[in-house]
Image (cartoon, rainbow over all chains, first blue to last red; front, top):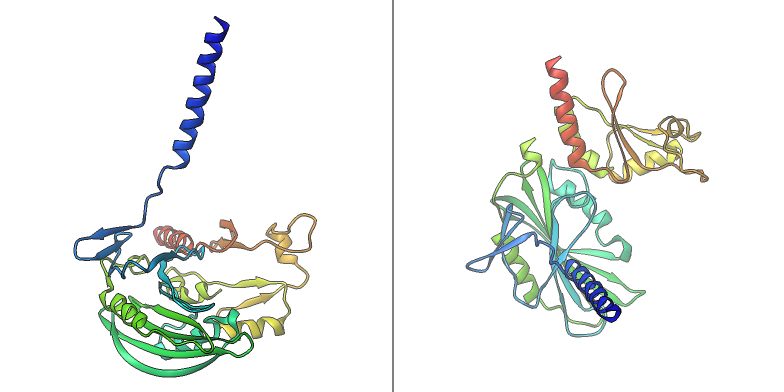
Length: 203
Length: 104
């Protein structure tokens, strides 16, 4: 009788333990929906073309509850060969009056931990999210660490506020850039569409 | 701080003004404001008087917690949150407060 009771008790404990495991492994809801035709709808607010499979989703948590996400790809070659691109609803800086003003503020902070010497390669006006924007291509070099980065930053407008897209491609100083990644980024940016007004536009 | 600067046009819309408070000296704050392009006032409070008044002193340490406080036009504290400001929450609160004020 006692052995039977113990068996029942052990069974209950095991069930409880398994239930605990099942709770831990419950998948978290994802903030996006994959649509037919390779498009993604992000939080029912933004639509864009999904990048190829080798690009992994990168969620940026900044604690100011604005939308920030991007994609990352490890590249062949030595450290730090990696390419990352992102959408940022609140890029560095404050100016909303002109893209040029925001550009100046942005580059004071962009990749500032790396202490790079930036050189502007090209600056041009572009069409982005249905309006005028500014695209700036830069290259930064860190001669101490022997690293370099090529970046493209695109400023656009959502309502009264300036939004940004950027891609960074890091390489060792002697490495070669893979500009096909910039084409993936350009497709991402040109496919970008707002499906509804932003929080700030509804106030 | 940049977040507040970006939101100034919305604070105006809701009849609100923003000021920052820090224990840094005036020269440091001037440089800080210039480097970030801040146009709203930053108050230098080296004695910590305001920090004590708002009860943000960390126990056992000579530092103050970051806190966002909204004071209405009659001088009553209506909103107080520790940590990095939740700008959307602040804006929604100011909008509500402004609507309340308009009804009175």
